[in-house]
Length: 614
Image 1 (cartoon, rainbow, N blue to C red):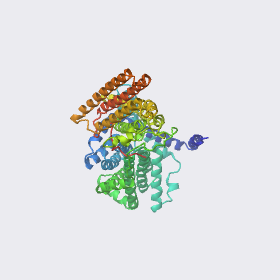
Image 2 (cartoon, rainbow, N blue to C red):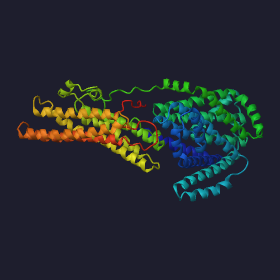
Image 3 (cartoon, rainbow, N blue to C red):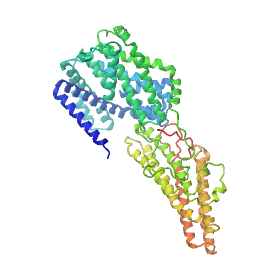
């Protein structure tokens, strides 16, 4: 019996009970938590609205504006400033790297820029945290935001932004009221800590708060409010800000490592290394930061404004990290590749005579993950990679259905000895291979496509329909091969008969077609000979079908071939033709390129697939 759901439910119930009890004990704590909830909900609304308005443009810009490190830095800073979420930009970048749309070095520069862009949020929060109420401004924003939700998608997104700002304003006021109403400040339990121990305690508080709230903005808003009400000292606020940076990078790293492929994992690790290294250095410089920041704040007339001083510290802290790591980008990228090397892709996926896969645990998709759903572009690239994976599996299953090793596809010429040999009783059953290697991947592709819920243009919708057809054609080809294998296994053992000769010819024809399809698919679709080669495949298959039928009828009339065997041969000729036609359609569909992204969009024949992720 699985007790995990039961234990999880009990822990959630216990947590809710403890939280409710704490609310009953302290109305001020309830008010503080309510303000924090409003603030977090406002941040969520703001991110969603900004992403709906600028997201598609931002994603298109991301694939085009990363050819130099400086452009990548600017993109990260501007994108985070617009979306007010370094986590969202970081996860979007991880998705683009995971699908091969941008390189690791560009992703590292984007992370640097995202950290700089995130500092704009604390300046806005510092300005909003001054000694005046924001609630009167929130009320008209709430009304306007709700009314906007009844109109066009653009106005609805704008209304979502207004609602987010309104809830943020209401949350800030509630947080300030909750802090000021507390009977005892934070200084009583934590004020006893000083020196490096005190710094470590407050860094830990900032890290833990950010990990729990999943928002560095929220933890910094609490810090600003605590500063404004005198609950903490300035140096303690600096330490919490350092911890917030650590918590933000750790939360992004966890999501990236769990949901990204090897390339995405490298970028997630780069984010953690960047923030942790910078934070460790600044941690030991904290005793000197107070006078420096106060002096710099005096230059802008904010010598007595501790909120502005915290915002200034956060900005200089992140700027220091960028300046520290900027000359080390290439070295960091190379080191990350050494730490997380690519896994070698086997030349053959299904090689053994004995099945090493159970139908209870079938092979699943390797390139489809939640991170790839960040945008239509990343989702499209992930699906194309998975279709290549499905294609490799399908061709290998068809080879095994023909009682031939996969090496026959890749060899410079057919091995006649292998082509003429009788089926081995230990050969893999095509039905078992279909359930082990094809069905799970196909199901995952359909499930992934069903979760993509973003606005698309006509070309993009056509691409998804074509992708579904490609997957279906590959699956149908494998199913036809399953039916073909039954008679192949029976009649190829009938030594010296005319039926065996014809089944050997069918096996040769299908194997040659598979080899030809693979060769054509390796060509660039823009190659002028590509269409000619594809047309030749179609004509050759039709010609063979016609000639094979004629030969069968000639032999039946001459009493050289039994009519029952002829009917079996005609049925299996149909399977051979269906397989060839299906793969021909896959090649045609793979020529579609609805998204303006770089990279090879062909589906079939790629031996240089991206390495398997973990």
